[in-house]
Amino acid sequence: MTTPKPPSDPAETHWLSLTDLGRIYGISAVHCGRLLSDAGLRQGNGAPSPQALTQGLAYQHHPHSPNPSAVWNGQGCALVLEGQGLRPMAENHLIHQWADLLSALVQGSPSISTSAEEMAGDLPQALVTPVNLELKQRGCSFQVRRQAQPKRRASACRRARSSSSRS
Image 1 (cartoon, helix red, strand yellow):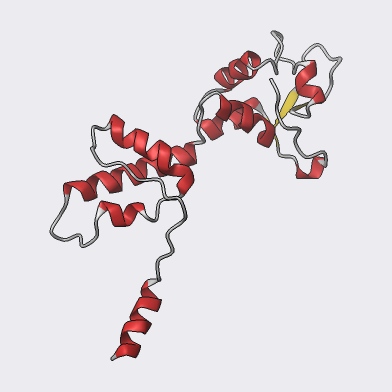
Image 2: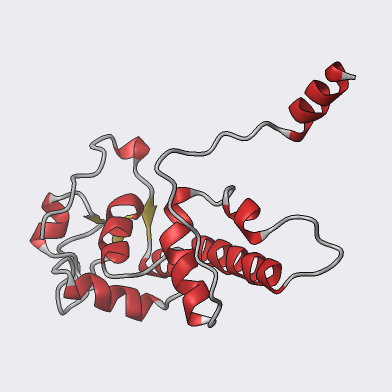
């Protein structure tokens, strides 16, 4: 497995326990440890593998003690965990919110004056695929179209100014 080497400056590295790393993804420390083991970064005794240590993905406080404690590079391990299909809880929450909004707009309401297509224009490109998957899982027929170039829309203030200057 090839993982980009994290920043070499320890001050730039966020070292996390398995518990804290797992919390980001909504999983237990045990599950997180198992996933790191599956990726070859953790040994059976819970210690980081030589690969994890050389790649800067783990740091072992007392490697020769009977119970070696380790911390894990948050950024580097995120690449590994997300490569295994996990998504940070905050991102999952955002995906669900977008799917809720777009599916509600598809259903329509007399009090809402915007369409799902218009709102989808504001969806960050990185979320298009996961939001479309979520909409599909919900049985919603609407799918966000990927834009070749981000659509630039005039802000409400600019539209108001330009319409008032025409008057």
